[in-house]
Length: 622
Ligand code: F6R
Image 1 (cartoon, rainbow, N blue to C red):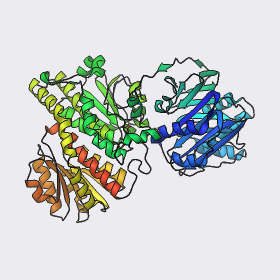
Image 2 (image 1 turned 180 degrees about the vertical axis):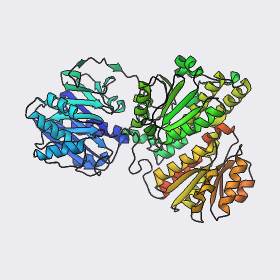
Image 3 (image 1 turned 90 degrees about the vertical axis):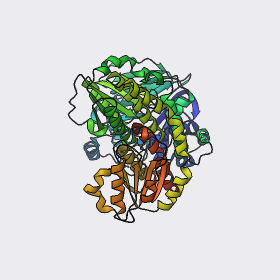
C-alpha cells in the first residue's frame, strides 16, 4: 500500500504545505510512518518520522521552497515502522532519494550483491536496494538510464518516484502493479498514488500503465516503456465533484470538520448506512414492474442472460458482502455463484468458460489482490464485472461493465456503510438477474418493494444505539467472542467478528451457528459470550436450538432478533431488535447493530477506532 505524492514545478513551491497536504489525503493508504524529500540548491533535503503524518509535520522546516519534491506515507511490509525504515530511502552518497509503494521480491539477492560491492544499507526495507542500484549504474550511465536499468533488474511491484541532486530539475516515476498517476496544472505537475491527492491542484491526469516510466521536468513530460519505446498518453479530464473526491477517503484539516458532531468517522459512517442504501437503490428500482435498472450493466445484458456461473472475487468485508450475495443470487436469482478470496483466486487454476463471469467487489477499487485476480481472469477472456464505490478507481477502469454503489466517502478504515450498500447492490443484481431467468413478477415486485422500505427500517435500527451501547458496556472487557448466524446471516456474523477484531483487538470468531457443535462449542463457558443473529426467518428454529446449546454450557448470548419476538428474550441474556423484513434482505438490517457494537467496544477500550493499528484503508500490496 503506502501513499506517494510529489510535484515538479516551474515555480518554487512551499514543500511542507503541499507535500503534507498531499500525504494527509493519502494517509488512508498507510499511516505508520512518513517522510519527504526536496531538491534545494542541488542538494537533497529529507526528513522522515515514525507515526502519523502530523508527527512528520513537527520535524520539518515550514519555510523551505523547491521545484522538485516528494513525500510518502507508509504501511510497513519489510521492516518495522521505525524512522530508519520510513521513506524516502537513499543511496550511499545521499544524492539519490526515492519513495516506493509495492514489494521488491528479489531484494535479498540484490542487496547481498551490492553489499559485496561496498554499499552500506541503513534500513531493513526491500525498497532501499533500488537507491543503491541506481547509484551503482550511475557510475557509468545517465540518471534516466540508471533508473531504467534498475527497473529491469528488480522483480516485484512498484510505484516509484526518484529524485537526484545531480539532476536537480528532474523527477523520474515508474509503475508496475501499484497505481501511479500524473496531474497537470498550469505551471506544475503532480504525481500521486491516487487522484484524490491531485484533484485540489489539477484535473487533467495521465495514468501510467504497468511497465512504463516517465521523466518529468518543469518543461517536459516523457513516457517510455522499459525497452525504450516512447509512449504517447493523452490526458484525461477528471470530472469529479467534491463528494466523489471525498470517496477516496482522504483527510485534510478541513475534512476533519466533515465529522460534523460525531466523535469518530466510524460512528458517522454507521449513521450514514441508511443513506448509503438509499443512494445505492436510488433510480434503480421499478417497483410496479418488479425490476432493477442497472445502467452500468446494459451493455452486457445479453451476455449476462447466457451466464451459467458467476464467480465473486473480493477481500475482507467486500468478500463477506459477496458471500451474502451468493445466498441471494442462488436462491432468488437462479444463478450458480462461487465466492473466492481474490488473494486465492489469482493463484488457483481458473477453470472459466465462455458462460462464466467474474464480479469483483471493492470499496476502494484499488485493492491489489482483487485487481490482480481480475487482470488474471481478463487474460482468460472472461466477462469482468465490478461492484465498486470509488468512481474511476483502478478496478472500475479494468472491468468491462459494472455498478457503483455510491456509498459516499468512507473515511474510517473499518468498512461499514460500504458493506450495507454492497448488499443493497447485490440485492438489485439478484432482482436484475432473477427477472432475466424465471423470477415471477410477483416475487420481483415483492423484492423491489421490500428493498424500497429498507432505509426507513435501517433508521429504526439505529434508534437501538443506546441499548447497544449498554450491552457493549457490559461485555467490553471480555477477551473472546463468537459471532453466529445461519444462511443469509452467516456472512454477517463473519462481518461482525471481523469488525470487532479490527477496532477493539478482541479475539472474535465468526461461525455458521450450526457448525458450532462440530468443535468450537468446546470453548464455551461463562466468559466466552456469543453474538447470535436470529431473525424470524426460515432457519430461526435451528438458530434457537443453537442458542439453547450455548446456554446449556453457561455461555452468555446477545441475540439480534425480529421485533415482536418475546420468546427470545427469555433465553438470550441481551436482545437487540430489528424490524421484520424479507429474509434475503435481513443482513442489511442486522449489520448496523454489529457495526455499532464493535464501535462502542473499541471506544470503551480506548482505541483509535478510525485508524486501528496495523491496518490501512486501501490495501495495495498483495
Ligand atoms: C474491513 C475492511 C477490509 C476491506 C478489504 C477490501 O473493515 O475494511 O477488510 O473490506 O481490505 O477493501 P476494498 O473493499 O477496498 O477492496
